[in-house]
Image (cartoon, rainbow, N blue to C red; front, side, top):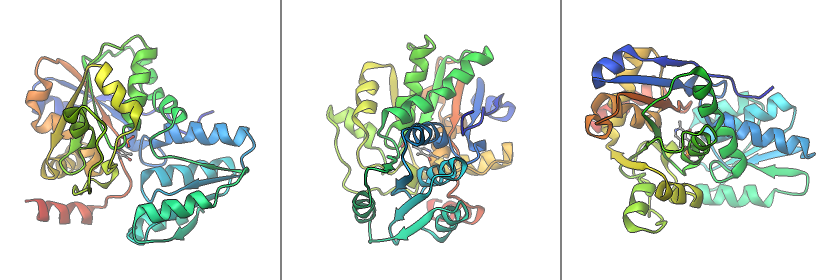
Length: 306
Ligand SMILES: *Cc1c(COP(=O)(O)O)cnc(C)c1O
């Protein structure tokens, strides 16, 4: 029994109409932790528990931290999450509700992460949000489910932060003999570490994250994602925060699901990404989800991005 669920795969009538082609959605927003992250983090936590680890440590105040807290609760393993002072009250509450020990420390993520690392001993495991092979293997299960359904897309659309999802989906495509399927890798401007790395031909580090899509806010993509993006047919696309927020609003109307702008970035391909989807009849969008956004946030972003 895995900690994640098999999510629905549906053909979206409103998005297909809008995009002028068949758009299929893998609804990772419905995972019990609210995002796809539970697939990889769930597998990693299960593996560490079997190896005898007695505590999980995370330094993510976002969907990765929530997935660790959820996995720990399910497995009966205590979880400590260290987050910076900038972490929203909502995120703190989500973590507390899952009975994670919450330590608020430092002005930036780097400081919180340093403290988290110092807590580690032989009996505890650190869960990285995107850079670990167990994570990729777990995320790949998403593609297994699509393959088992009998539906074969012409292209896959997904969002890129640190590149864990991209690495996992490509692993899943390969293990289902779909290695040649193009992947459209979407980032928001200001969180476009993959796009800039591909342009530069080297894994650059962004100076700062200036996008509101905080779940895409990795200053550097992991090496695995960078290598795969160059060895596979990966098409890097950058959208504005505004396009991502617009897509969140329209998706709420169309499918009654609230997702983060990190996910809206991918949905924007159906709403206004005609160019990137050119030539593909059946497109699979990974609806990666996200628990950190509220209707109030969305309204506020719509106002500032207008
Ligand atoms: C983590 C996350 C991403 C980005 O995933 P990476 O593995 O870091 O590339 C995108 N969307 C949501 C909702 C996330 O939680």
